[in-house]
Amino acid sequence: MFYRPEDGHGLPHNPFTAIIQPRPIGWISTRGPLGDNLAPYSFFNAVAYAPPQVMFASTGRKDSLTAVEASGVFAVNIVSFALREAMNRTSGPWEPGVDEFALAGIAKAECATIPCPRVADAPATLECRLEQVVTLRGRDNFLILGQVTGVHLRDDCLEGGYFRATRFVPVARGGYKDYSTVTEHFQMTRPGEN
Image (tube, rainbow, N blue to C red; front, side, top):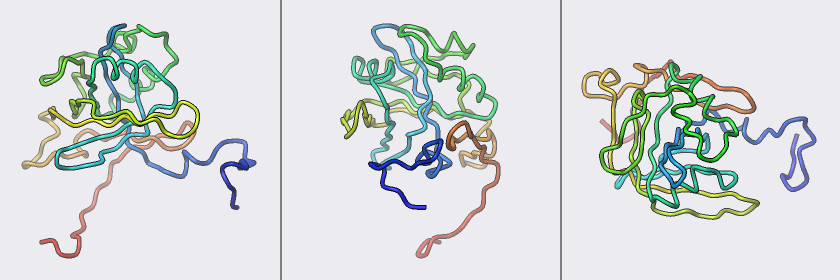
């Protein structure tokens, strides 16, 4: 099968999001004019190492984007298998001003370098200062770029000086209603490395 996106795919469900998987989930927490907000974004990733920078994309001008533009900060919380149901609860179409931390029964903590809440039990949280909001082609597509200013690592996720995903089982997004967990890891040495 081949299709051009502008012509449509002819399938009952759009295959685009199912092709690019697994996708990490950035559980974005913000504090804006209407209060605290927490929502998952599967168009999320790291984009630079030094200085560390991340991105997430929003389809639509959602509460997270509004709060980030108002405050200039956001936090990226990593989703563990233990937090999957709470993460899913925060993805609902809630009214502006609803505190998803309270709605989903999630323990909240304050960030250290920015005025923003974070998920207290997340395996890791990246505190970020807004670098840029890029309006993408299409209707209501936005790319949010941030520089990491602080990193929280849960102590039980550290092993021998390494942050180990096997200690918390990260959740990733697939297509449609599909999610997956990362439970197996292997190592490979790249050419030119010791």
